[in-house]
Length: 316
Length: 256
Image (cartoon, rainbow over all chains, first blue to last red):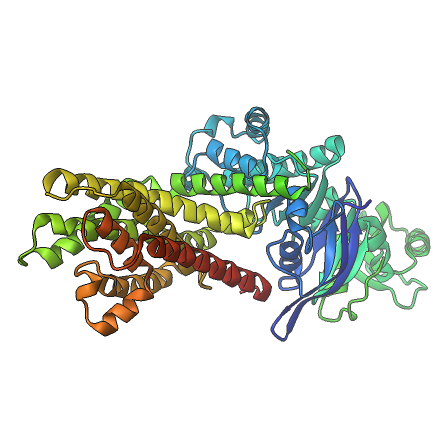
């Protein structure tokens, strides 16, 4: 059984179609990155999956529970860190965590033990009696993770969890989520703008564009989908006085690193590397380094969601 | 954490979550010195502003003052809780927890009613201690205070369900609804002494039934039989909560 099974999920705001018949699955123990430009429908999708918004059409199963007809049981399986959410400012760190544990029905002895462990894990044990209002943004976000995890969820929804955080807090959150996924099999649905984070954490990435799912695949497979952005990088000992010619008619050559380096975007990077090496030997140029390079996730994202992107058709 | 899907287990779990929400409200919103002080001072001074200079025996002030204390304290904070939480961005996590909408609203109601009933003990104690007023029917007093607190707490829950995140707008609406009720509900002058049109309007106010029960409990003449007053307060509470659920559901569907 998949942890998340989304079936034709749709959300309209009046005449605006914010999420348009989105379908995908997230396997048990998988981290799925959910990417998209601002206004693409990411947060609306998360809000429907977590039961905050009702879908206009379609549904989703969370751990086998339908979010529309069996919402309470579905929500019992979730831990949620909503976008821009906050903690209760007038409660202490400990009271915030215990409140969420009580809402998820965690028995007293277990919530006390597990809450203490989580505070230690996120470096908040020394701030236990401090009020929520006294925490920095980074510490507040750590506390929200504790609050989401104290109910011992099977699925964790993180909506932009590291946006605007200091490096240490962001790293701690990424490492902890990754470790819980590896060691405890926690399924994670991660909405993020940080493509580096998605690349590092996620087993698969889904890209939503104009309310429709444009792609779902592993970061590696997605990078392979845009052949034109594969490239060869060559750094010469001294800047060449001419540019090499390559046989690929669609190749684009750019210079970098003070003119001593060139990057050739081509669908045939191996052949281009050989041609450049041969040309360098003919010209008597020394090559310091030569490497072929796949497109970054950022380039994939821009190719799918940029102004000249094709109409969203899911690539799986 | 039980995953038992039997209805009785689900109900018991939601009842427990109602208590958790009420405890949260009490800790964050009610057990604050300014809130308690406001809950006491406002009705007392409002009533004294009306009563001073008129030839009223001090004991006659007690029922109105007590009913006003219940009314204002039980309905003062409730309308603001949801807008505050939406504005402070804590509401979404509460709404995505396993607590149902009904459990959240009943938790808000429970906290409001408990606060209203508890605060009203102070003017009651003062009234009984320093005036000639005395309780002739503890049952009517208890039902007037508790059912009144529940109905006014439910009114607060309904006012909070309005589709806005701005506490100032809710406060304005809250006062717009609550203040006129004082003048048509027999608080200052018994309902029977009010003009006919006012009596008809008074029948539509939950405050009238609370005042009537409290007046009767302190030996004054009641307009309605006690079961009518008690039933009316329960009916108002149920209707307010049902409307609040409806408004919240509509908001969830429309996404506003």
